[in-house]
Length: 302
Image 1 (tube, rainbow, N blue to C red):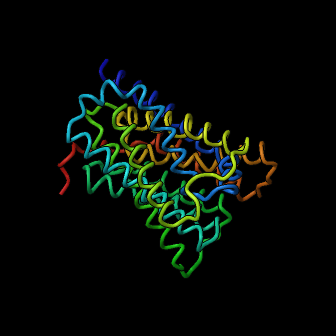
Image 2: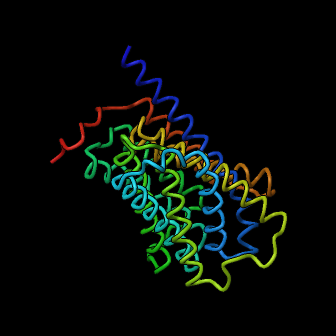
Image 3: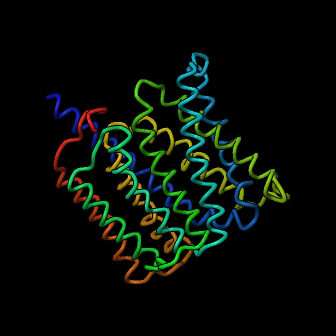
């Protein structure tokens, strides 16, 4: 009975994490239109500030009992995720979008090994093989444009992928016993603060000169669904599965991004891109069907 309950919780968690990937992928077309009107960090701080305000409505009762340990966890996780956005943003200024997409996706490679060393959850054989398939799929999905010689932009995005992986592992290690509403609020609020400081330091404006319909729609969609909902689900339910499996689920984001781009923006994808999407899905299925050895308890690794 206990095993069935655990499996049921894992299935529910992984389904909800998949919906997060749907919302993330679906916001690509609207965000692309929005950042054509305002600088990236300006858009990010407005998005996260709105998200933090919405989440404050449900997190306030628990925030009144906030302790230092939870506060430190929220700041650490939020700062880690902000750094991922920061390095990706500056990396995109110096490399191609195809390279940045693939290199950001390298987090599916880093997660199993970081989880093994940091939280004592080594990847299964199926998880390793599934991650390899997912990386191959990301490579095809982004055009197979990996350069032999990395420039500064490529290296910055590689750093971004490490912070994405650290955030995924951190959610697994630091959310036990903490109120998910409080941790989600703290992460988003920290990201809003860092984004505002970054925008003030590096961008010509920190407040839009005009509020178009597309910009308002993008802020509402990303704040409610791609941030408040997504981060609450990640914080509350990711601990019911493993970091490796969560990372594989998050690789569905570019698949859904491709689907929504074709549907909403009229973009076309090559056969290799669709093949890459299929490989990503195959990697997830393989990790599910071939679990291999169970993760060792935390602290049991050398």
